[in-house]
Length: 153
Image 1 (spheres, rainbow, N blue to C red):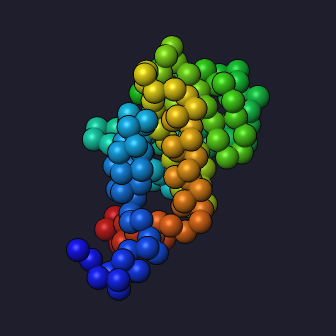
Image 2 (cartoon, rainbow, N blue to C red):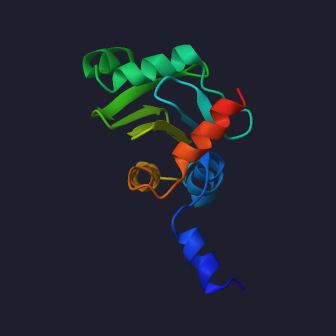
């Protein structure tokens, strides 16, 4: 078992971008596939085979601020058109049939998550919103990871 010092050291941070996706999103059981991207659309991490292309991301990011266009056009991701259900400058919720797309803007990244039945929209939304809150509260060492990530580009 861990010493008190080790426990304290771990309390400050929940880890990296990978942990956000694998533990926070997919590990919750409520998000099927997901990704974390910079505000510029650089993908830091995603579930296996899930890559948000730059043009797709640009449309998502613009949609946080232009709801008129979002509600008229929806969002295309991986060839699927998602219809907008709700939107504000922090969160976008879209549906395609029984599947849903959630996009949430945190302080230094954007979370993109897809959910499918039997998961409800409220379960998936609560999951992704709480991850964004944790990022905003500094519970993930995203800035440090960011530096390492940029050094490896």
